[in-house]
Length: 314
Ligand SMILES: C[S@@+](CC[C@H](N)C(=O)[O-])C[C@H]1O[C@@H](n2cnc3c(N)ncnc32)[C@H](O)[C@@H]1O
Image 1 (tube, rainbow, N blue to C red):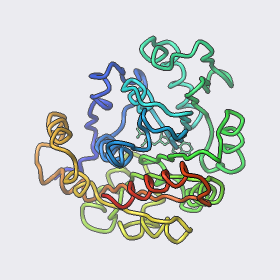
Image 2 (image 1 turned 90 degrees about the vertical axis):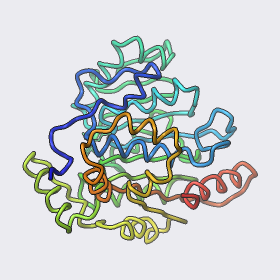
Image 3 (image 1 turned 45 degrees about the horizontal axis):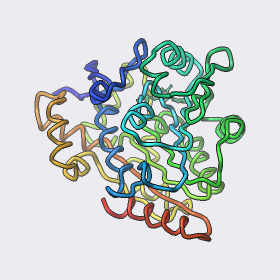
Image 4 (image 1 turned 90 degrees about the horizontal axis):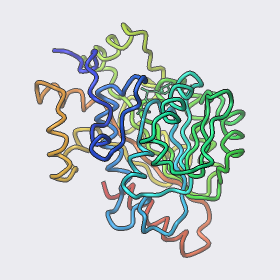
């Protein structure tokens, strides 16, 4: 039995190609786990069908912050589909954002989607700024001191409803640092939805093997023992004052996908055995939670309904 986390690397988000969004050439793609999780995260993000948090029809201005974005192309896929956000921020280490910024800047498929003549590189080519898209460099372990001021300098607005995304990122940093990000978001944002996708269940046989295989590739997951189960992933939010939290493993999320989405995934299948996939899927979870401050106006009340639906409906 293999861990499913070996060297197999599926294409980065194949639907992107279908929708005219190319992969980030020259950047390493997401691992199988990340790839499958993104399908689950998108399902969570969609929330309700008609007036989801990120639909063109929703009148509410909103932001997205992708923590540790890597080579993810979700902004481009969203926009290619006609969805819009007030601003989409991506953050990663400088080495990673420099490569991503260069790929985007020289690729017409990306710059056409950004569709902003004022698009410009910054900080020696490690950052990109456009009207609704911003790629920032920095270390998430210095979120409050360094990342927040950078976000604010690019128009990040704490009064706007904001979706924070972390796909296989927070688990790479010490819990005190990832908790500090959640605490800052909870304390400072008027309304936020936080979605985390990461590994769980390190203590069973498969989990132990998964960690050994990662270790052999010099990858540590310092966060996995702090939040090793679905319950602890929910508690992580609830104990710090988030209003509702939900965590499910990827088997559960798969079961809730539409027939159309399941059909699409089956064409991408990267595992030989269903059992192998199910075992791996037990070791990946999506956890999400929302938090809002005082509800003063009708838009805010509508937003609260959307957010609570997004957490309670799954
Ligand atoms: C497994 S990759 C996931 C990338 C992306 N979220 C995706 O879904 O494809 C983890 C990413 O987190 C970034 N990362 C890890 N620790 C970080 C830190 N302390 N500050 C900024 N980025 C970090 C890495 O550089 C890498 O791009």
